[in-house]
Length: 250
Image 1 (tube, rainbow, N blue to C red):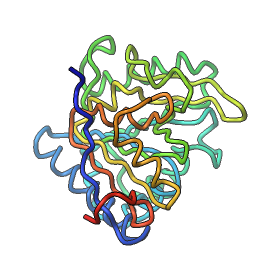
Image 2 (image 1 turned 90 degrees about the vertical axis):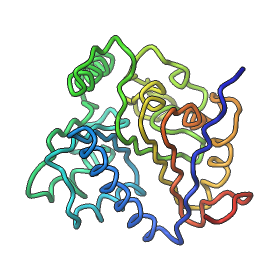
Image 3 (image 1 turned 180 degrees about the vertical axis):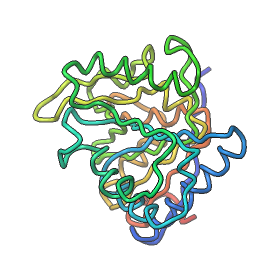
Image 4 (image 1 turned 90 degrees about the horizontal axis):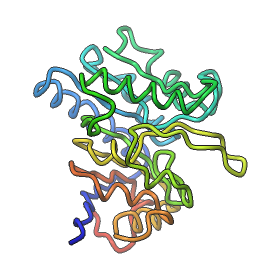
């Protein structure tokens, strides 16, 4: 029997500004919860304009950074100084503004000479944080923050790429394809193992991808369907424009 799809909880905000504020408040709440339970919070962040708005709000808030380790969901094969860098964008919007840095800040080395070697090193970094072997089961990050593309991708798991089915590694190197940079990305194994997965999305172009991602179907067509395999809590946090038309307002 197939495992049921984890459709998660759909939370709808009125507009992008409310979405950013709600996401930031959730972020802080989840960190405090993890720290109270385990003494440290471990989160993985995504890039893009939607999380950047959350980062800008977080820069104005009291956040328990000294007990937080920050990882990245994915990164392009560019230096941190590039305007295409997910880490660079987060640093500019948030981390460069902090008076005290996080307990651990672990950018993916997108500009490494060998992305294959970089993926293995990043898996080792994850393993060291959790005190486990990178050869074992994927560790349970407290929160993995994801987005979803108009094409149905999430992290750097793209339609038509074999990366979406890979479960034997925690971190994958994704080759360049038709003008898209090569990438590093957490694998579905790490996403599925997270205690919480939060998907941030805004805009009407995300309605269809979100609706597909929350149903069973071809993951090669809509890689964001891997979110449905998550064993922890799943939250789809969207603005009103992104709410699938067949979903009631929450």
